[in-house]
Length: 114
Length: 111
Image 1 (cartoon, each protein chain N blue to C red):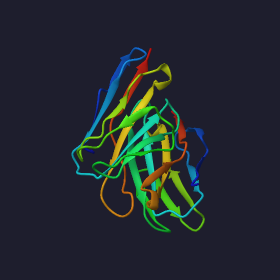
Image 2: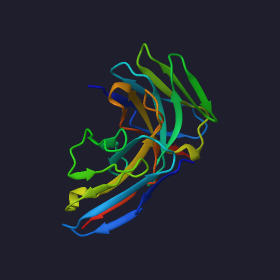
Image 3: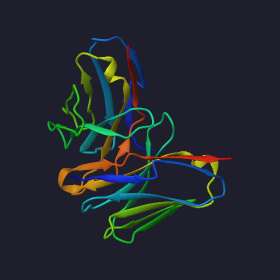
Image 4: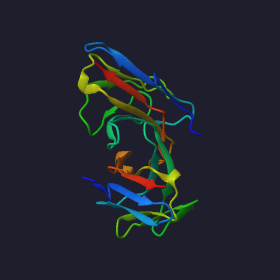
């Protein structure tokens, strides 16, 4: 089982609140990713990182921001949550190498914005 | 732009039957992945296919890769209810350090 963790697992919050979704991995992986997924739907890449101090926006426009100050930690922040942000957020990481290795996924954070 | 297409997107089948899920992609890739997702859960890695002609099997699932045709298949043999899940294929774009996912195939196996 992969050692990648997400907290909180579930979050219900009011509109306008600032939230941070945590993601940590203990595998020493250099690449980390955030995906947004509505129930039963496809995954959308919203942010990724090649390593410390590296962050890139993904294919889906997102109002969130990320940081990568430590290898093991890749938090995602929403400055002002809106109902349209209601979704499941999946964090993933993959190992070193020239080609992208298998991505290991965390358990996900299910976010509901009222 | 890389496109990854899965077919079918929804599949309802009876236990004991065989079926194949197809994954087509539009450009050269280094690797192809298959993942499983149970409802409300995260993704679990099933297979990584690294080269043309690669075949991997785990239980009732077998995945293969034809890089010339840009096609991967996930074959289910004698399906059982426990295999009900959504199956995603994903294709590696090494130059971008990203993996592009298909839309997923929702498989429902009737007891």
